[in-house]
Length: 388
Image (tube, rainbow, N blue to C red; front, side, top):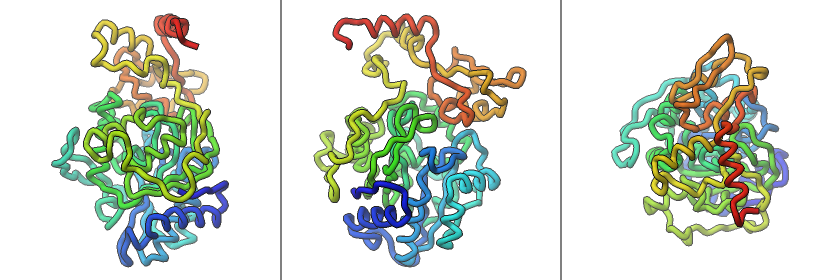
């Protein structure tokens, strides 16, 4: 871990180089002549200052270090947001994120090929076959360049969750539909990580995102670059920095359950700058982390689960903001959204509360609120004895 106060290119290069050097340097992970794929967080078309995507200076730093190691570098991802995995959309997201300039300056490859293939995953617990974009499978090694952000569904998105981008765009809603629960979705994410097996993890935590991430939250300074060879180790440290208990993060719990790390995380150690120097104690949590978060389906009767669904936040369309782009229709895993007179309309009865539509709406036309009954339940919970 290395401190990094801003996105000055040389400062970021120094921080990434130092954090990687603490792990043995690039030579500990890569050999000259290898093709290394850089997999950033490219959620949607967004400029760097919005803190939605991995900052281009972090991509630049890692690409430069790999080139100096004699590696061929490819930058690739399949964005979310309901975007079709097409060359035109890749050009849009690369351009907005600033990666086209990185590629031009360093002479590295931006992937515009849009093929993907079915890859067997016999060791998977949830998924035995994934669709994976071609450049991932053609690379000798993958480096995940994640962004420190909160997430409405999984509480935090970091190293583990970022790998979801190797799945082609519209396959993502299908996986959300198959695994609507946070625990099962996170187990699928661990399956995917174990299949791809990224060689290295670098996290852009210079500026993170707090609140209702991974798209509609607010930028928040953290001031660090994190590096690890293990996705769970990195996420456990990032969780602490973002004022979560690592056990609150479902992907970490799923990895613990598989014996990837010890339950008490005693096998996760840090080198470099001290973790406590970067902890943001008032890091704002997603609105979906509420007084009901401690309950699980196993603890509740089916009747009470109906109350939980009524209580839970639901996506609602603000018609005045909706431009009729249909992004939400494309991304909805349960097909509960349709266009009516040029505006999106959500059928809340079949909504699984995955919040993909809210996450991906570039116009912020979808908000999260409660039904009338849900507001009554919320008021009762807020007034219960012992709650401040």
